[in-house]
Amino acid sequence: MKIVLQTAAVALALSLSVAPAQAQRINSGGQGQYGRVSLETGFEPDPYMVSVLAGGPVDAGSLSPDCNGALSERASFTLNYRAGDTLPLIISAVSEADTVLAVRGPDRQWSCNDDADLLNPAVRYDAPRSGRYQIWVGSYDPEQTATAMLYISEIGTGVMFADVSSAASPPDWSLDPAYGVIDLVSGFQPDPHMQDILAGGEYDASNLQPNCRGWIATAPDYRVNFTAGNNNLPLIFSVNSDSDTTLVINGPNADWICDDDGGENLNPSVRLDSPASGQYDIWVGTYSQGPLQESTLHVSELTSQ
Image 1 (cartoon, helix red, strand yellow):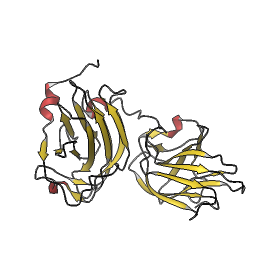
Image 2: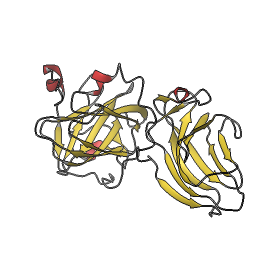
Image 3: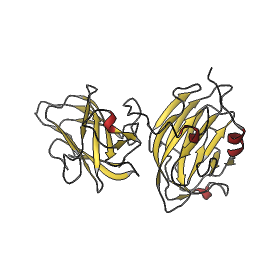
Image 4: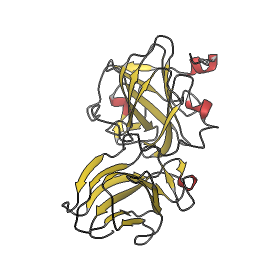
């Protein structure tokens, strides 16, 4: 049995507001933008962490007058949770910016919070239900987006862990990719296959091996299940972005393949002349740590972008 740490300060800080109304522009279905996870009470490690981009075009006040800030139309993250009998469920976010939280629980009720710990929000369920929690990390300022770390815990809020979370969780290919999965067979059309991705994260890719660069997320950004052919075509992964981006790929043999400026300008490109069939998990990173950056991933057998 895990030890539950509770303080009067945390208990007093977590003021929740529950609203039954749904925002007209919120899409509460589907998988979160930055992935999903299934957790059972007593999960380890605690907290579970994921880097997200906070903010969006939706007025959180459309959920309820008690909700503040600006949210994305689609949930930031999806939690499938199996509850126990004793432990709370605490969802929180930590950012240098002023962020907010909106959570739609298994009972389809909204719980919102703004400033549980300084300018960091937290939602606490003392008797959580089993089921699906759709989580939005928003920005208090509707004109601002910011990188935030989302924490899911049964122990405490993210502020408790912030000092030890600077060494973010390493990339984990077993997690669901944030931007989806594609099955490609050699000779695929159209070529290139393209996917928009917000590049970046909280993990320093140079910790993987010396030739890796940039800051990446824990969950893969994209997954390609590739079937090779007999036509001697290469497989080329490249990125197009106005920012300085990097590529980190975990291939079918569980090997790490990395590139920084192998493509045009400051864009990365990885070319495999004899690609193996199997699963390729792809992370698009930013060379410098900071906000997530817009980018487009290209997968081709013909050319890099």
